[in-house]
Image (cartoon, rainbow, N blue to C red):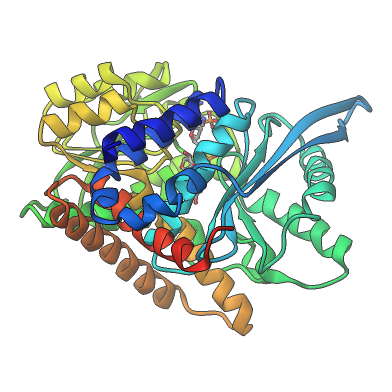
Length: 448
Ligand code: NDP
């Protein structure tokens, strides 16, 4: 059997063993096909079953999360935690609270997380979790009761040296606070390193909130510079208006780019004069309202129903920062037709496989999620370091480390792409760079 047939065989096994888990299939497909040249160079990885083992989580937990709403009704949600791979460090990955959450979504995110965490150069393994709970429209008291019930089961499986969750869609500082408080109560111990994304008064890191968005823009800036292009003066479209989107917009503006649009799951706003970030922050972070409120404050701006329309706005740089599969073939074709020069994935797997092909075939510079959005988890790992040494670094110290990490990820991706004969293909470069470290660690540790 040649290497290509071997990889196909493993992929077939993934399809059979995980029926119906389409997002997980998609994530595995994208990665393992790009590893064919690695297995050609390293037959020992084939012999040790590295690929068969890396696509199978170490373990996965599914649990009932009962809670009582403000009207006294009992509500039941489903909780998940997938501990995917701890070859290079404790499992690490966020918790997502969103009605679309299911095992397939958590597994795709957990699988991606293995290679992303490896790319940061820091000692963290891959995991992910969450619930189909919808925080939208819930009171603070309901959120707190839900988080406490969720943690009353999750605490059995996590720990600062075992598995370290963080935030993701629907889980921000408020939720992490309630989760951490309850973990502390259940354990009767102050184990700050068990969760990241904590508030600054109880072990959080400066620049964690900004890290994913800032890191994305640092990566895209490096990628553009690598081709002699400046971000300054470029028109940028961002999707989403949550944590990643807001801080991506902030950094683009700081570097002189002009962001003209952003969105939420209902629709998008277009402000030809440039998005006023203070307004977006107030609407989303303080008032927790919908993005359409923006036009009541800025009369030159437009609001359009339907979030996917945001990709019809002509731009030089597109930064998808909302959710998976938000750019399909059609949206990618429109972006290319409108002259997009670079796409940087802030969200996880926001482009479908067909969309990625369209970008690559049209020589659009393409920064894949596992490289471009690794800044969040990198600063989470720095939060763990600060917790371990019981010390806090300044914003500048963390931000400078973040910048260096993103630069290294970019350079590593470029180097690996070139070394394996795929120059300028950062998808393949990032997959190979992330995989090599994990594969080497798995190889050294024997069949476990
Ligand atoms: P938030 O919950 O803060 O924001 C999510 C944004 O995306 C909101 O504007 C939301 O709109 C929109 N959105 C969510 N689901 C959908 C959907 N199904 N269709 C359209 N829009 C949607 O999450 P984050 O900003 O933290 O996460 C965004 C993406 O970035 C996710 O893919 C996440 O996995 C990824 N990511 C996040 C990291 C982090 O540090 N936070 C780290 C690395 C990756 P609405 O308000 O209407 O729901």
